[in-house]
Structure formats: C-alpha cells, structure tokens
Amino acid sequence: MLLYAVTDRAWVGEQSLYEQVESALKGGATCIQLREKELNDEDFLAEALEIAALCKRYDVSFIINDHVDIAIQSKADGIHVGQEDMPVAQVREKVGNDMIIGVSVSSPEEALEAVRNGADYLGVGSMFSTSTKLDVNILSKKTLSEICTAVDVPVVAIGGISKANISQLSCTGVDGVALVSAIFSAENIEDECRLLRSLSEKMVNA
Image (tube, rainbow, N blue to C red; front, side, top):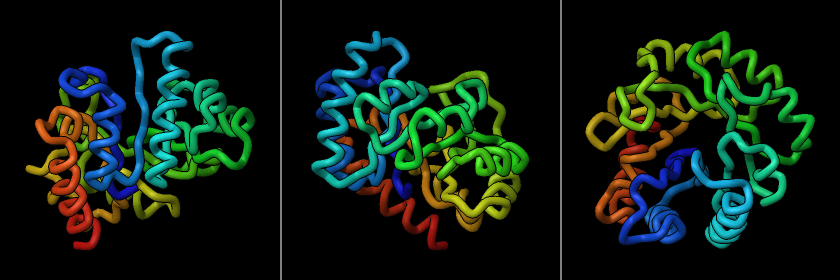
C-alpha cells in the first residue's frame, strides 16, 4: 500500500496503458488499481486480464475499481468500492474471503463501519484539491489521523497528492499514498515512481 498507483486513461499517448503500468511497476509501485470509466465490460475484462498477469509477474497486488464482476472474472487480488457503490457486506458475499476489499471513506464513522462490514484497507481523501475528481471535500490532516487511529487495517491517503505535498501527510499514521496524475501524467513514469516511493517511505517513517 506504500505507493498505490491508480490508472487513468487520460494520459495514454506515447505509451499504452499496459506500458504505463509496467513503467510504474519498474519504478516501485506496490499496488495497481485499474480504473476504467469508459470501456465496455468486454474490453475492460480483456484489459484486466492483461494487467492482472503483468502485476503477477512483478508480485504486486492488482485491484479493480468498482466493477465486482470484472474483479471476479479477472481473478484480481482485490476490489475497491466507494460510498455510493455496492455495500461492503454485499461485495464480501460476492467475492468470498480470499479477495482484498478496499473502501473509500472520509470520516472515522465511515471507516469503522467499512471495517465492521469486511473492508481490508481504506482509501481516505481527498487530501488536496484534485483535477481527477472535481466534486470532493478536502479532508484535514486531523481527520486522516483520527481515521488511522480508529481502525486496525491499512489506510491509504488519496486525492491531489504529489511530490510537492506528500511530506505534509507525515505523522498521521497513514500506510501509504494512492496517486493518479502524479504518476501517470509524468514524462518518465518509472523515474517518477522511484522518487515518489522514496518520498512515501520517508513520509510513513517520519
């Protein structure tokens, strides 16, 4: 969970999404979440199977965003859901006990409920303003700390995090950072991930 890379097709260009993910893995990403808002189910599944095999080669957890059926069919390591998606208890019923479930939360109350219902880790944010999601509330460092203290599962901070502000999350108890544009918009994704992993390690151990 130290350096959790979340894909976004917006920056596909010189490299394919597959090549971008491999660059992130080479640079030290410790987890990959495949997020697709536009693809149909058939294309999403085909892509998920490819990325799942790639992550297995690098021995890194592969997580699908939102689409429980795609996660099951691609034999992903995990599924991540938001507050507006399928309830966690229902997700657990569908995926069984072997799949990791991550849940997006923004308060200690949501965090505790998610863990009670079977969440294995939490994504907390948005910590900073972000171009990836425009309709978000910015959480305080205090709220992040309270969530980390309230639960005994890994907590990953997300939302507008970059090399310029990652150090501001020090001393919160967070286990890592989830990054979208900070990784996938980089000119050299592999080098950027190397730097971001180093900064994340410093932040976590501060």
